[in-house]
View 1 (cartoon, rainbow, N blue to C red):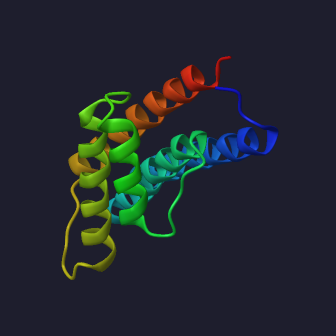
View 2: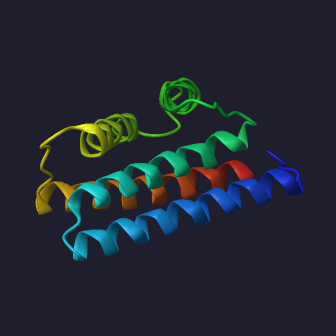
Length: 135
């Protein structure tokens, strides 16, 4: 698929933003701010999903809409692993609990697992975008 320059720029911007969020999650985890770390991990995953959606000129103003589009266009088709959908859903749940749950505690193990999931998610989406972008 041949992408126009503005779409390429958007995809690149979103991937860089996802990597930046992942880096922030790692920094926060090192500083023992585990709740904020899982929140940043979620946004790293979410932003990488939006980068892949941009390949098809798709997006949504709602998190649930992005997740639904991602599942419909990339998971259901088999283009990305079903695990990717699980990582996205689990990360969203952790983020919501960490951001809004009173007395919710995130362990270092959970924060590190979310970082690893985000890292793998981003790498997989970069690969999928590269495959889609080849003429």
